[in-house]
Each structure stands twice: as C-alpha cells, then as structure tokens.
Length: 249
Ligand code: ADP
Image (cartoon, rainbow, N blue to C red; front, side, top):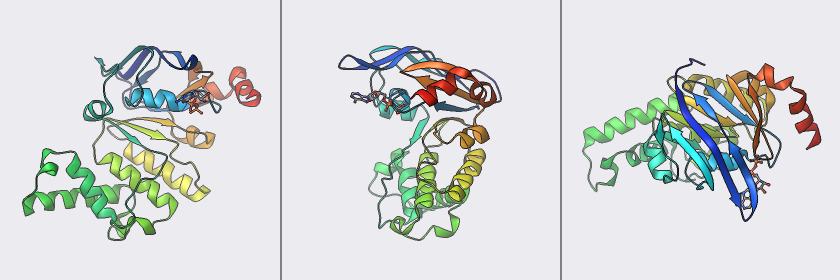
C-alpha cells in the first residue's frame, strides 16, 4: 500500500433480497494503490458487495463513494466510465476472434471512434499497437494471432484481464482470478497481478489464501454480510474469529 486517500468508501452499505440481507451495513475503505482482498466463507456477501460496487445491483441502504464522489445508485456504464473495471469469473469470449482482435475491440469500445463506421488507418494502427502492449503485459504476446477458442483456461483468464486493462481502470475488481486454476497458473496470475497493480487499486475476491498472502496489502473478512475483521493478512489470519468463521461455516 502506497497509502494516500480512499478510492472506494462505503458507509452502511446494505443489500436485501426479499427480506434476506446479503450485505449488511458494510463500511469499507479501500485505499489508493492497495491490493485489497475480500475474503470470507461462501454466502458471506462478497459477490453481492462486488455487484454493488460496480452498479450491477442497487443498494437497499447506504452510500458508495469513488474518490470522494457519490456513486450510490449509478449505472454500471457510468461507474465503468469513472474508472472502475471488472474482470469476470465467467469467460465470455468470442471463440473465433484472435486475441489481438479481442483487445482492439475492447479498446475501440472505450472511445467514441469505436462507434464510427470508418476509422483512419493511423487510428487503427494505434489501437493495434496498444492491443499488442496489453497482450504483452498479460504474457500473451506470442498468442496474439490465435483464436481465443484455442486458449487454455489460464490463458483465457489472462485475456480477460487484458480486456479489463484496455479500459485503463484506476480501480480493477477481480472476481476470483485464480478460480479453477492449477498451481502453475495460480503462480502466474499472482505475478501478473503484481505487475498490473502499478498505478492502480485492485480489489479482489479470492478463496486461495496463499494468493491473498502473496498479493493483499489489506484484507477484509466478511461473514453473514458484515465485516468480521480487517487488517493485513497476518493480522486477520491469526484472528480467532476468522478461524472460527471458516471452520464453522
Ligand atoms: P459470497 O460471494 O460471499 O459467496 P454472495 O454475495 O454470493 O456470497 O451471497 C450472499 C448471500 O446472499 C447468500 O446467502 C446468497 O444466497 C444470497 N443472495 C445472493 N444473491 C441473491 C439474489 N439475487 N437473490 C436472493 N438471494 C441472493
């Protein structure tokens, strides 16, 4: 953590589904430049909290601020435009398009140019260069011209990261970036997140505690929709309440 101000700040954030409160009065502060992990047993409310932060769900109560600006109830599009990008757990790629094409499309989508029928060669070349850089950043430079459908699982997840990075987000939300990965891919992903965290704030939901240990400056433990405790990885892992939360449920 290169501690400056709060990038994300929630106060009393709550979400109920037909009487069931999945997120219950959460006061979360994510500091600029941190990798901040959200952990907790299944059903703790991590995904719901992510969906609130990205505008996919509207809060039942409470506020969300992004760098001091109130974004409570803002649309996902607006929150994305304000610099929050999310990499999904579920792969949603076009099997036939190459990696280069995927990233170029993502880049075009971020500009008004992308909506034009005709774009100059010079502009297209710029997109192509930037796409190449992003693929290089996530370790996929050599695969740039292969169809996404031929990628191995870990590579698809890396491509999704490149697509999120195409938005040049100030805040990157990663939903279980190592889910379903073998040990080698997990290690590669940890190294990748370490590289891409420069100039960014990263919030991640992660079940693999060695990944949390390797990446997180700050860890928030959720249980029953509430913050159970918060601190560095070493602080929270020795907290008896955390041990009990995991063993108990
Ligand atoms: P986590 O990601 O920590 O596993 P979730 O945020 O997915 O937890 O879920 C928290 C609780 O909210 C769970 O009990 C879940 O069943 C419930 N929940 C989540 N989404 C909905 C929904 N759309 N409708 C009803 N209940 C939901």
